[in-house]
Length: 383
Image 1 (cartoon, rainbow, N blue to C red):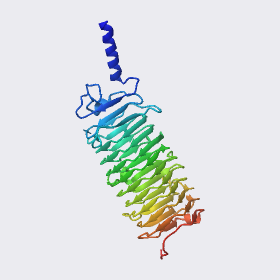
Image 2 (cartoon, helix red, strand yellow; image 1 turned 30 degrees about the horizontal axis):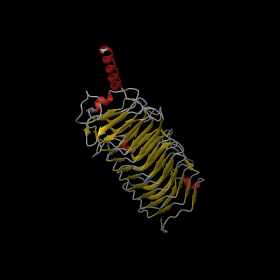
Image 3 (cartoon, rainbow, N blue to C red; image 1 turned 180 degrees about the vertical axis):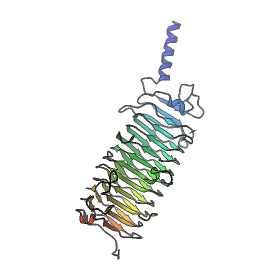
Image 4 (spheres, rainbow, N blue to C red; image 1 turned 30 degrees about the vertical axis):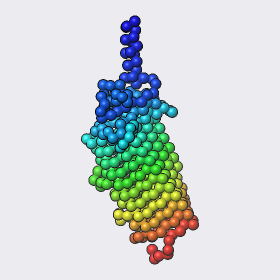
């Protein structure tokens, strides 16, 4: 009888330690002990314990509020449809902090992780990116995070060299700031929602290579980036960057109801991308470089891979004011006709440009079939 009882105890304990079939909640505290069961009464202590554990779909991993972990979270498991694995907080006080100083990433997803949520955490001081995923990943939620002070990007959803397309991210209500390169970078992303984020004081460096050269508060790139929605964000004070940059992306992307202001380059830049809808945005006081526009649409004849059309874009119902060089500019970037055509610019209010025209159509885009309809361009001036 004793042998049977002992076997049952070991079997139950083994199920707990290995991540049993039933979803459960695990707790992590600076006052915990990694040899314990990970309960709220006896929490684990380190992120290293999490990195080596196999979680089940539906599990929740909660960090104690006010705690600081100077480690990198390398997520070991995927959830399942309707049963995401959730990383979050418990208790009262400040958000739990993953301080990744000395580590490449704060949170890393590798090997195609999916069905995960990250809520109410602070991620800071990584050598590279605060949050980084590579390889195919999908059905990921980032909600109410603070991602600041990282060596490159705040949030970087990578395309693994163009070989994969990440899908169904929801990046919602986060604070992303004071990162040296882009705040939120989506490289090959489909059906992703970027909504309600405060993205400010990114692109703080100009000396970190291409990540700083091509920089924005929000930047989307790769022709497989399709059907994404960027809405209700405030992207501002990104010193060496663009507020929202749709760069060499695919069709079906929507940029709407954002505020883009006090960025070093442009408020919204739609570069070598067709089929974008840009509407209901407010873009103002973007200045700091020799060319800074509220909204900039550009196609380019050029040479591969830096060439392609900007066509069938729809820019309407935006308010654009007091930008440095242009209010709204639409042009062929290299002055060769044929790349910027069949665009609609309608019902926009564009005024107060400080050092140039409120509307410029150039590079022979003025001879293409672009339509400008019912825009208010401010008081008439010589330029």
